[in-house]
Image (cartoon, rainbow, N blue to C red):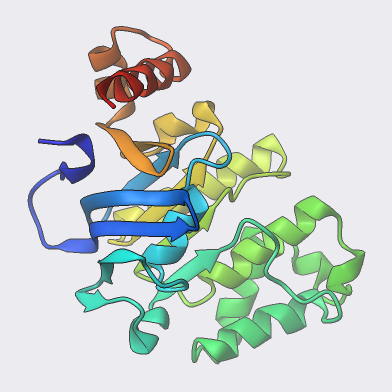
Length: 250
């Protein structure tokens, strides 16, 4: 069975890709990807910049149209307007409004998702340690602080499916640990989380990894399984070996 068709088995998938492809002219950003992702797990999309991770996430979230195949989230074929309300998406670039204050951004996104309780805003800002900056204009925040606010806005409605594109870039190490602890609590509560990264040392925090190269899933499994299959204790070396095998198979 091809690696990009493998699934962990057991339980209805929360996210499904079926022959998913996206081309930009001659560039195959996502190339015939098929997988099932079950709920209550953190999945890591690992690969170098330009490997297709962001495009794959956008396809799964229904934010761009596929050239071929389709994506399903929570049983609905994407794009689905009603399903979008149940998805959290933290983009690679900061998805917040610089002319609004920190609190205004949080309240705006809460209202977009139909969340009116002040508690949700308070909890989200406390999570990213921005409660004391609630009245600050977002445009005056540092890059790392804007990144933290983007996360707060993405999770403010406690979505059952969460897509995080490079969520810890520019975040200090202590807060990064706090973020991952929060991601784990969401997964333990039944959420399905897809995290894209090119940072290998975060991989062990994921339940399962999908190595991405040139728009394809070249390997899938836990970090320990991938290391064992590659015959190395170094995850970056494991990626390089799987990448070499994929190139040789072409």
